[in-house]
Image 1: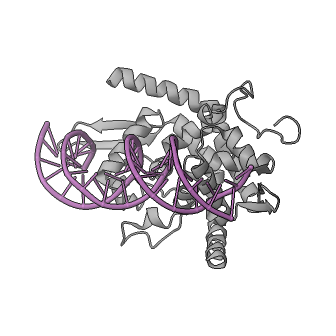
Image 2: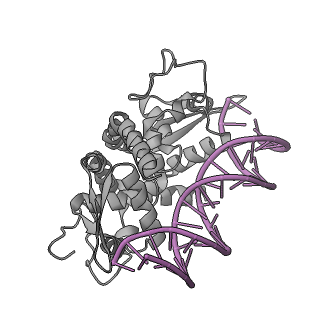
Image 3: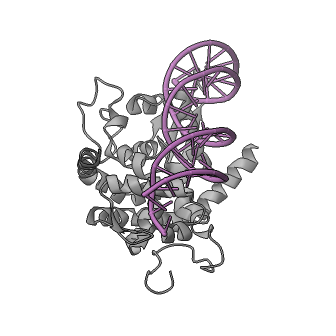
Length: 136
Length: 136
DNA sequence: CTGTATCCAAAGGGATACTG
DNA sequence: CAGTATCCCTTTGGATACAG
């Protein structure tokens, strides 16, 4: 990586050589994906990005998510400062979640990726089939 | 989801009601994250997005990735049509990987997300610390 | 209604050894 | 050099039961 191959843009510079494990671990992108690359986070963020919702509404709309995972995902997003939690002290209790400004930013930053997925995933699926049949 | 809460933008419409598991499974975003949300794919895509590289170069630059995972990640990206593999029949053999136009598109679509991560992950980390100390 | 706790199966991923 | 195969530990996440 010293003249022929330019480094990829947008990474923590490091002293460049001298260590091998630098690139992966300080990488903010990896830190982000460690948190929202799981099975449900982006889905929840998107829904909350459109409008605040109750726990049960999220559960119903996502469909396929377990109570445990929804709870866990929401707690994680709350911890990250991406969503807020509001408890209405009624009986039974009502809890609603909303996106924070920071979370809204992230949803915005994910928009292009989501767009790409919607336009191109069929192409990817097709490539897979080609690969599987020709090499399979 | 019929008047008060608008649906989030950019999702497969469905017949809307009648099934619970719709939202999650047809979602192209989930399909994408299932493939590139893993530990190494985005990192590899970024590197190859900047310039083609040999297997060993990737291994060295990423540092922390095992041979097995690099191989597996590259195979998966190749299968998805995001990178190409070129074998130079020398002894020992030299294999280099390059991004495809489709893969380049994806790297572009991820740019905003990566940008956000680099600008905001410290904020997220701070939020986590606040959450952890206040809630104990 | 909104969780938490437990149990368990499956997937992810590292270390190591081996191959062309 | 560029993989593949194996072993094995860790993590993820679903099902279920229970609680405020």
